[in-house]
Length: 165
Image (tube, rainbow, N blue to C red; front, side):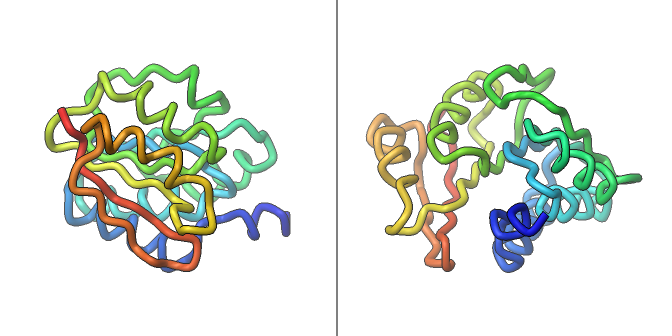
């Protein structure tokens, strides 16, 4: 499990994502890449504290899913074992956090775009200049699909943006 911890979102970024959920009061949240569930649990706790909202988190690794599900027991969280590219939301997405394989995150965003609306906020992990994510996101920004993007200089980088609909 040491590998899973090294690949987990930094605790500071997890707290920031949870704060975004607290502030935005979303009804429906999507997370890609549950990992061992640190950020998943934080989002679930924020939703529970808000008194509203549900999270669907997507992960392909069954060992990580088992850990994440144990962490999120009794929270408004559903962790599905499936590719993020195969999942179809059943309602509009208010907040999404993309933290799966870097090469998939921009594709995931475009896949879920039909379920997003003008108030949807999205976050992308690993957007520091030393990661390839910025290159994947730049075309989305140029096309106006991501607007008012805020790149924060955390150790690995994180970006939050409004959806340009």
